[in-house]
Image (cartoon, rainbow, N blue to C red):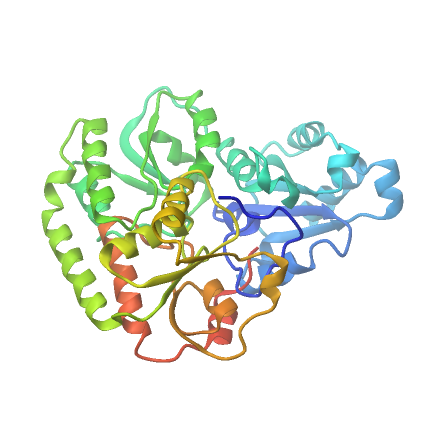
Length: 413
């Protein structure tokens, strides 16, 4: 199945991780956006919401700059920024807006010149082009490539394991972290790096585990500079699939990882049964604001016996496609709704008696109950399934204030 490729509606609940939040995960990094003055109002407001205001600056270009080029404007702007800022900048991202696709600023030349002026700072160029979202190199992919390009190649690697694709730490009491540590591995996670030097150690690990596919391009390029390797463990809420992924990881590492999770499986099954008994036949709506793979999540909930009636998504990604096809074929009664379709601006005014997993589906449907989950944050494996169940279980105890949830989480930036 395919969604319409047309004008998009970005609703207030479409929060999440844009290039600012992702790049700003690197400690002592700073972002400089080069764009017309109206281009980044949404981003500036979002940066304030998510408390990144002090790590972002802007060079506003004029019509003359667009016609004549603005390489020198960038160089002068960076000089002024570094003279005035009080931030300790180790990595400076310079992003140009989508109109630069027509102008063709040589960002490599600009960043090379800046590197010669400021040898203690690393500079990386980036392109803020939402139109590229449907290409093989969307902004999320190229941003991660810029982020990982600063990591040094290492001849000697340690027994550490780096996690990639999770924007919030997988908790220490998660079964994956527990079993890896039991086998003597140090776990490195981007969101827990305290300074730039600690971030640079992410490439010390002999193995990386990738949770979301948009990191693969950057990681493959990093591995050309190291002897490291990686294994993909895409986010899943299906117990059987999770168990299989641990068996595959055990084979990849040539050590036992899956043998210690029997208790976690039993505990997770009990939590599913407990939640299903409480939620009952209540309609369940699944949103891509809750998870990067909404069709995979919906398929798992259907398998567990939940009454999934709607799935809201803005796109169908590669890993999710087979699940979208399966649900369409086996459950034609389930409505699949393109969340960014222009018609989505017309939303329910009356409360819908349903449980929404994620805020976007809740906003568009005006669902009465909301499991407040965003972008798989802090959720992985069997523990992630239990967190999902706990959120669904507690959600039906009270009517959700959707406006408050949206304001607390903030817009995408």
